[in-house]
Image 1 (cartoon, one colour):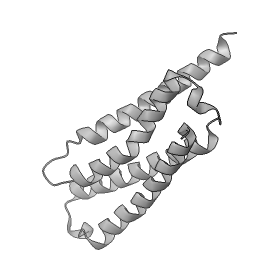
Image 2 (cartoon, one colour):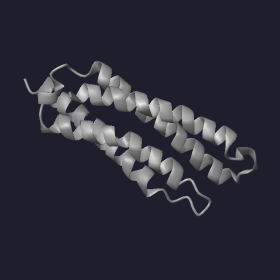
Image 3 (tube, rainbow, N blue to C red):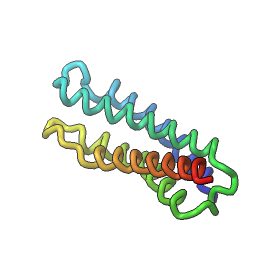
Length: 131
């Protein structure tokens, strides 16, 4: 399966998980009674999940049809973006506890997406200005 299909399907699955985590927060967790810090952790992971899911849908939509053969950098960046949706879902359920505000899964997921975006932007700048 091509990278673009993987991005599209992971993005769609992430959008479904976004809806389900919203329902989980609304119906299972007692959000109004929750301490502010913990409520913020849940909501931020929930919104990050939406952002990463939409980014994957967009990547699946706009990626070139021959993207599966476009090189190591493309594969690395696609892999980082694809793994972001399940990792942020894991962060939502594991790291939004009242035990503390440290969220290493969340942090490294966002670092990975930042790295992917930065590498792709630099590659495009190189391509445009090299000649």
